[in-house]
Image (cartoon, rainbow, N blue to C red; front, side, top):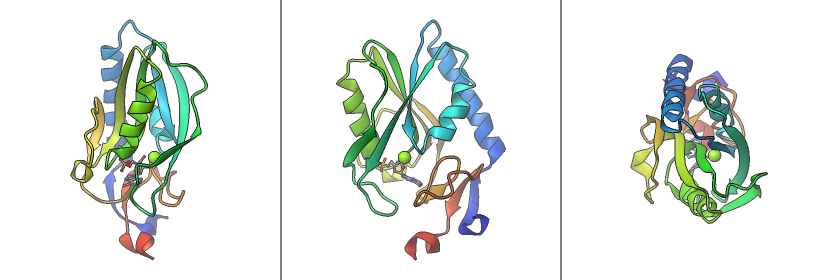
Length: 179
Ligand code: IMP
Ligand code: MG
């Protein structure tokens, strides 16, 4: 696995430090409230698991799984919900937790979808942001890191379902996905 990664972009300590900061920020911003963290499977699973342990509030967790019709390393924005939330989010303070915002198509679909369920509030928390690739604007409230336009894996992010368990975020060698 390691040989498929050409560069470690964010090491384990750097990620952990930033996730802790995001948790503290959310704790401050949502004081007195009980937000629902909506984890977008599978990519945000590791991020959500770490983030929620740094939020000192009576949160709840829910999960949504989507598959986006895209090939290889980019998404088409045509999104299908493969697992919906277990509970209603009506009148709840909802925070969408996603691994990465790239073109923005996936998150803008999710935002519209969840908005239609009438939450009290809705915000977005992403671990990674690739601003150079943005096609539609997405209002990201919490952002872990801005990264350059490389295809990255690890800490939940995959290529063809692999590499999610790498403890850091690394740049995948282009040979791996060009092959
Ligand atoms: P968007 O719709 O283009 O913003 O893409 C968002 C989705 O594409 C994310 O949820 C990821 O699943 C995937 N994605 C985008 N960039 C990367 C990357 O660099 N590595 C792994 N997955 C990525
Ligand atoms: Mg994803």
